[in-house]
Amino acid sequence: MGDGKAPEGTSTGLIIMPCGQAVNSPDELLSKVYPNIQQNFKDQDWLSHRAIRASRNDVLEKLNVTIQKQLPGQKYAYKSINCILNDDE
Image 1 (tube, rainbow, N blue to C red):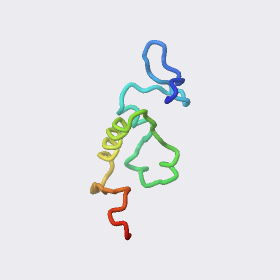
Image 2: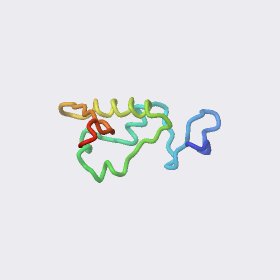
Image 3: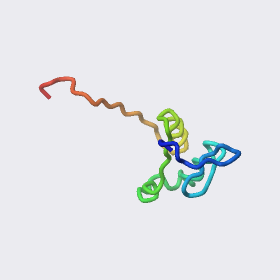
Image 4: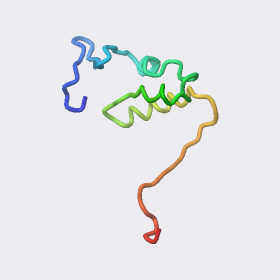
């Protein structure tokens, strides 16, 4: 994708992934990559065989929010930093 060499459908402009499946919407993409996520989300082996790649982080953020809304339980947001606030630490 990044180097512009990903094959595109001739008339649709859709990117054809190596698995040979094209999708028409974000919801269809999520249902193909993460089928039955409500039942499988705790299975680390199942999750480790799935990924969605995109050229921009904002696209992935929207997909992540959509996926998280499908999961049961309380939602939490954890903030992090990647710098030292006190040089003595």
